[in-house]
Length: 297
Image 1: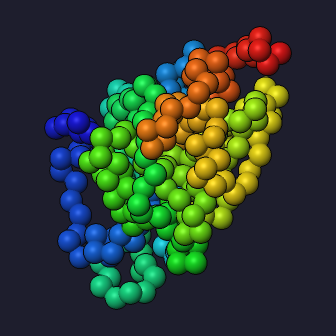
Image 2: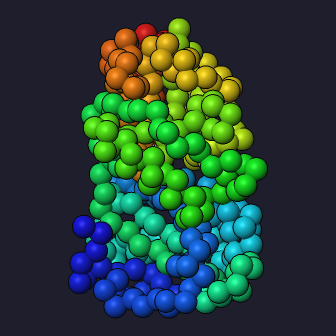
Protein backbone atom coordinates (compact mmCIF):
# COMPACT_ATOMS: atom_id res chain seq x y z
CA UNK A 1 0.00 0.00 0.00
CA UNK A 2 2.75 2.44 0.93
CA UNK A 3 5.54 1.34 -1.37
CA UNK A 4 6.55 -1.10 -4.07
CA UNK A 5 9.80 -2.24 -5.66
CA UNK A 6 10.12 1.09 -7.52
CA UNK A 7 9.38 3.48 -4.63
CA UNK A 8 12.13 6.01 -3.90
CA UNK A 9 12.65 7.51 -0.46
CA UNK A 10 15.17 9.94 0.97
CA UNK A 11 17.14 8.19 3.71
CA UNK A 12 20.39 9.05 5.47
CA UNK A 13 21.46 11.68 2.98
CA UNK A 14 20.51 10.06 -0.32
CA UNK A 15 17.71 8.76 -2.52
CA UNK A 16 17.29 4.99 -2.34
CA UNK A 17 14.68 2.38 -3.06
CA UNK A 18 12.40 1.83 -0.09
CA UNK A 19 12.80 -1.92 -0.49
CA UNK A 20 16.57 -1.59 -0.13
CA UNK A 21 16.75 0.85 2.78
CA UNK A 22 18.32 -0.61 5.93
CA UNK A 23 18.10 0.44 9.56
CA UNK A 24 19.94 -0.60 12.69
CA UNK A 25 18.18 -2.90 15.16
CA UNK A 26 19.90 -1.04 18.02
CA UNK A 27 18.49 2.36 17.07
CA UNK A 28 17.20 4.16 20.15
CA UNK A 29 13.99 5.05 18.32
CA UNK A 30 13.17 1.40 17.68
CA UNK A 31 13.54 0.45 21.33
CA UNK A 32 11.95 3.46 23.03
CA UNK A 33 9.70 5.22 20.50
CA UNK A 34 12.09 8.18 20.73
CA UNK A 35 11.53 9.82 17.35
CA UNK A 36 9.75 12.76 15.75
CA UNK A 37 7.61 12.78 12.64
CA UNK A 38 5.36 14.96 10.53
CA UNK A 39 2.46 14.26 8.19
CA UNK A 40 2.32 16.63 5.23
CA UNK A 41 0.08 16.70 2.17
CA UNK A 42 0.88 17.64 -1.40
CA UNK A 43 -1.88 18.64 -3.79
CA UNK A 44 -2.10 18.85 -7.57
CA UNK A 45 -3.33 22.44 -7.82
CA UNK A 46 -4.05 24.63 -10.84
CA UNK A 47 -0.60 26.14 -10.22
CA UNK A 48 1.18 22.79 -10.13
CA UNK A 49 2.12 20.45 -7.30
CA UNK A 50 2.05 22.27 -3.99
CA UNK A 51 3.08 20.99 -0.57
CA UNK A 52 0.62 22.58 1.83
CA UNK A 53 2.09 24.42 4.83
CA UNK A 54 5.50 22.84 4.29
CA UNK A 55 7.37 25.48 6.30
CA UNK A 56 5.00 25.18 9.24
CA UNK A 57 5.39 21.41 9.33
CA UNK A 58 9.18 21.45 9.25
CA UNK A 59 9.32 24.25 11.79
CA UNK A 60 7.22 22.06 14.08
CA UNK A 61 9.45 19.06 13.41
CA UNK A 62 12.47 21.12 14.44
CA UNK A 63 10.63 22.31 17.55
CA UNK A 64 9.61 18.75 18.45
CA UNK A 65 13.17 17.46 18.15
CA UNK A 66 14.56 20.25 20.29
CA UNK A 67 11.78 19.76 22.86
CA UNK A 68 12.91 16.20 23.58
CA UNK A 69 16.64 16.48 22.90
CA UNK A 70 16.90 14.87 19.48
CA UNK A 71 19.71 16.44 17.40
CA UNK A 72 18.38 18.43 14.44
CA UNK A 73 21.24 19.27 12.05
CA UNK A 74 18.91 19.95 9.13
CA UNK A 75 18.01 23.00 7.06
CA UNK A 76 14.25 23.21 6.65
CA UNK A 77 14.38 24.88 3.25
CA UNK A 78 16.55 22.03 2.01
CA UNK A 79 14.09 19.51 3.46
CA UNK A 80 11.23 21.12 1.56
CA UNK A 81 13.23 20.85 -1.66
CA UNK A 82 13.92 17.19 -0.88
CA UNK A 83 10.18 16.61 -0.44
CA UNK A 84 9.51 17.94 -3.94
CA UNK A 85 12.26 15.67 -5.25
CA UNK A 86 10.69 12.64 -3.55
CA UNK A 87 7.35 13.49 -5.14
CA UNK A 88 8.91 13.93 -8.57
CA UNK A 89 10.97 10.73 -8.39
CA UNK A 90 7.83 8.77 -7.51
CA UNK A 91 5.64 10.56 -10.07
CA UNK A 92 3.29 11.74 -7.33
CA UNK A 93 1.13 14.86 -7.33
CA UNK A 94 -1.64 14.26 -4.78
CA UNK A 95 0.26 12.56 -1.98
CA UNK A 96 1.01 12.23 1.70
CA UNK A 97 4.58 12.89 2.87
CA UNK A 98 6.12 11.38 5.98
CA UNK A 99 9.34 12.97 7.29
CA UNK A 100 10.73 11.03 10.24
CA UNK A 101 13.71 11.87 12.45
CA UNK A 102 15.07 8.89 14.35
CA UNK A 103 17.93 8.42 16.77
CA UNK A 104 20.92 6.16 16.25
CA UNK A 105 22.04 3.24 18.50
CA UNK A 106 21.91 4.14 22.19
CA UNK A 107 20.52 1.79 24.81
CA UNK A 108 20.75 4.29 27.66
CA UNK A 109 17.88 6.53 28.72
CA UNK A 110 19.67 9.70 27.69
CA UNK A 111 19.07 12.18 24.91
CA UNK A 112 19.91 11.23 21.35
CA UNK A 113 23.55 11.00 20.37
CA UNK A 114 22.83 11.64 16.69
CA UNK A 115 19.87 11.46 14.35
CA UNK A 116 18.94 10.26 10.89
CA UNK A 117 16.25 11.41 8.49
CA UNK A 118 13.71 9.59 6.37
CA UNK A 119 11.29 11.25 3.92
CA UNK A 120 8.77 9.01 2.18
CA UNK A 121 5.64 9.72 0.14
CA UNK A 122 2.65 7.75 -1.07
CA UNK A 123 -0.79 8.29 -2.55
CA UNK A 124 -3.28 8.37 0.32
CA UNK A 125 -6.89 9.48 0.46
CA UNK A 126 -8.42 11.26 3.44
CA UNK A 127 -7.37 9.24 6.49
CA UNK A 128 -10.87 9.03 8.00
CA UNK A 129 -12.66 8.73 4.67
CA UNK A 130 -15.28 11.11 3.29
CA UNK A 131 -18.41 9.99 5.15
CA UNK A 132 -19.70 11.42 8.42
CA UNK A 133 -18.13 9.70 11.40
CA UNK A 134 -19.75 7.89 14.29
CA UNK A 135 -17.36 8.29 17.21
CA UNK A 136 -17.23 7.27 20.85
CA UNK A 137 -15.65 8.66 23.99
CA UNK A 138 -12.53 6.64 24.66
CA UNK A 139 -11.80 5.01 28.00
CA UNK A 140 -8.20 6.13 27.45
CA UNK A 141 -7.20 9.67 28.34
CA UNK A 142 -5.01 11.98 26.30
CA UNK A 143 -1.40 11.98 27.49
CA UNK A 144 -0.85 14.59 30.19
CA UNK A 145 1.39 17.66 29.83
CA UNK A 146 2.67 16.87 33.32
CA UNK A 147 4.47 13.85 31.84
CA UNK A 148 5.10 14.66 28.18
CA UNK A 149 5.72 17.54 25.77
CA UNK A 150 2.22 17.16 24.35
CA UNK A 151 2.67 19.98 21.85
CA UNK A 152 5.50 18.05 20.18
CA UNK A 153 4.74 15.39 17.56
CA UNK A 154 6.60 12.46 19.11
CA UNK A 155 6.31 8.95 17.72
CA UNK A 156 5.86 7.28 21.10
CA UNK A 157 2.86 9.46 21.91
CA UNK A 158 0.89 7.67 19.24
CA UNK A 159 0.68 4.40 21.15
CA UNK A 160 -2.04 6.25 23.07
CA UNK A 161 -3.74 7.05 19.76
CA UNK A 162 -3.50 3.46 18.51
CA UNK A 163 -5.12 2.13 21.67
CA UNK A 164 -7.97 4.63 21.51
CA UNK A 165 -8.66 4.07 17.82
CA UNK A 166 -8.60 0.29 18.07
CA UNK A 167 -10.91 0.35 21.08
CA UNK A 168 -13.40 2.46 19.11
CA UNK A 169 -13.26 0.20 16.06
CA UNK A 170 -13.65 -2.92 18.21
CA UNK A 171 -16.89 -1.40 19.50
CA UNK A 172 -18.18 -0.66 15.99
CA UNK A 173 -17.35 3.06 15.83
CA UNK A 174 -15.33 4.88 13.19
CA UNK A 175 -13.06 6.76 15.57
CA UNK A 176 -12.53 7.82 19.17
CA UNK A 177 -12.65 11.06 21.14
CA UNK A 178 -10.18 11.41 23.99
CA UNK A 179 -10.67 13.44 27.14
CA UNK A 180 -7.77 14.94 29.06
CA UNK A 181 -6.79 13.85 32.57
CA UNK A 182 -9.22 16.40 34.07
CA UNK A 183 -12.13 15.02 32.06
CA UNK A 184 -12.37 17.82 29.51
CA UNK A 185 -12.53 17.16 25.77
CA UNK A 186 -9.06 16.95 24.23
CA UNK A 187 -8.97 15.65 20.65
CA UNK A 188 -9.26 12.65 18.38
CA UNK A 189 -6.40 10.14 18.14
CA UNK A 190 -5.04 11.96 15.09
CA UNK A 191 -7.17 15.08 14.68
CA UNK A 192 -8.47 18.15 16.49
CA UNK A 193 -12.17 18.65 17.16
CA UNK A 194 -14.48 21.61 16.62
CA UNK A 195 -18.11 21.76 17.74
CA UNK A 196 -20.83 24.14 16.58
CA UNK A 197 -23.40 25.70 18.89
CA UNK A 198 -25.69 28.60 17.94
CA UNK A 199 -23.56 29.53 14.91
CA UNK A 200 -20.32 29.69 16.93
CA UNK A 201 -17.46 27.18 16.73
CA UNK A 202 -15.74 25.95 19.88
CA UNK A 203 -12.49 24.01 20.10
CA UNK A 204 -10.42 22.82 23.08
CA UNK A 205 -7.81 25.29 24.22
CA UNK A 206 -4.14 24.43 24.10
CA UNK A 207 -2.53 22.68 27.03
CA UNK A 208 -3.49 19.02 26.68
CA UNK A 209 -3.75 18.86 22.89
CA UNK A 210 -1.44 18.79 19.92
CA UNK A 211 -2.15 22.25 18.45
CA UNK A 212 -2.48 21.06 14.89
CA UNK A 213 -1.44 22.97 11.81
CA UNK A 214 -4.80 22.20 10.22
CA UNK A 215 -6.49 23.44 13.40
CA UNK A 216 -4.65 26.75 13.02
CA UNK A 217 -5.62 26.85 9.35
CA UNK A 218 -9.29 26.35 10.25
CA UNK A 219 -9.15 29.14 12.82
CA UNK A 220 -7.60 31.40 10.17
CA UNK A 221 -10.28 30.51 7.63
CA UNK A 222 -12.98 31.28 10.18
CA UNK A 223 -11.50 34.74 10.72
CA UNK A 224 -11.59 35.38 6.96
CA UNK A 225 -15.13 34.09 6.52
CA UNK A 226 -16.56 35.72 9.62
CA UNK A 227 -17.20 32.67 11.81
CA UNK A 228 -16.59 33.18 15.52
CA UNK A 229 -14.25 30.63 17.12
CA UNK A 230 -13.85 30.28 20.88
CA UNK A 231 -11.01 28.25 22.39
CA UNK A 232 -11.95 26.97 25.83
CA UNK A 233 -12.17 23.97 28.10
CA UNK A 234 -15.06 21.88 26.81
CA UNK A 235 -17.02 19.43 28.94
CA UNK A 236 -18.27 16.21 27.30
CA UNK A 237 -21.89 17.24 27.87
CA UNK A 238 -21.26 20.36 25.79
CA UNK A 239 -20.37 18.11 22.85
CA UNK A 240 -23.57 16.10 23.36
CA UNK A 241 -25.53 19.37 23.23
CA UNK A 242 -23.74 20.71 20.13
CA UNK A 243 -25.50 21.34 16.82
CA UNK A 244 -22.71 19.74 14.77
CA UNK A 245 -19.06 18.76 15.01
CA UNK A 246 -16.05 17.94 12.87
CA UNK A 247 -12.50 16.66 13.06
CA UNK A 248 -9.58 18.27 11.23
CA UNK A 249 -6.00 17.25 10.62
CA UNK A 250 -3.50 16.97 7.80
CA UNK A 251 -4.29 13.30 7.20
CA UNK A 252 -8.03 13.61 7.90
CA UNK A 253 -8.41 17.08 6.31
CA UNK A 254 -11.90 18.31 7.41
CA UNK A 255 -14.45 15.58 8.10
CA UNK A 256 -17.89 15.85 9.69
CA UNK A 257 -19.04 13.88 12.71
CA UNK A 258 -22.53 12.35 12.70
CA UNK A 259 -22.70 11.21 16.31
CA UNK A 260 -20.88 10.88 19.62
CA UNK A 261 -21.65 7.84 21.75
CA UNK A 262 -24.64 7.11 19.47
CA UNK A 263 -26.12 10.57 20.07
CA UNK A 264 -26.77 12.20 16.70
CA UNK A 265 -25.96 15.84 16.10
CA UNK A 266 -29.20 17.56 15.05
CA UNK A 267 -27.93 19.92 12.34
CA UNK A 268 -27.66 18.56 8.82
CA UNK A 269 -24.03 18.50 7.76
CA UNK A 270 -24.59 20.42 4.52
CA UNK A 271 -26.06 23.34 6.50
CA UNK A 272 -23.38 23.32 9.21
CA UNK A 273 -20.42 25.63 9.74
CA UNK A 274 -18.23 22.58 9.38
CA UNK A 275 -19.42 22.09 5.80
CA UNK A 276 -18.52 25.69 5.05
CA UNK A 277 -15.06 25.17 6.50
CA UNK A 278 -14.67 21.87 4.65
CA UNK A 279 -15.30 23.62 1.33
CA UNK A 280 -13.08 26.58 2.22
CA UNK A 281 -10.24 24.26 3.24
CA UNK A 282 -10.52 22.23 0.05
CA UNK A 283 -10.37 25.38 -2.05
CA UNK A 284 -7.43 26.71 -0.05
CA UNK A 285 -5.26 23.62 -0.51
CA UNK A 286 -6.12 23.47 -4.21
CA UNK A 287 -5.41 27.19 -4.76
CA UNK A 288 -9.00 27.83 -5.74
CA UNK A 289 -11.00 30.90 -4.86
CA UNK A 290 -13.57 30.38 -2.13
CA UNK A 291 -16.88 32.18 -2.29
CA UNK A 292 -18.45 32.72 1.11
CA UNK A 293 -21.69 30.83 1.64
CA UNK A 294 -24.78 33.04 1.16
CA UNK A 295 -25.85 32.12 4.69
CA UNK A 296 -22.72 33.81 6.02
CA UNK A 297 -22.47 36.74 3.62
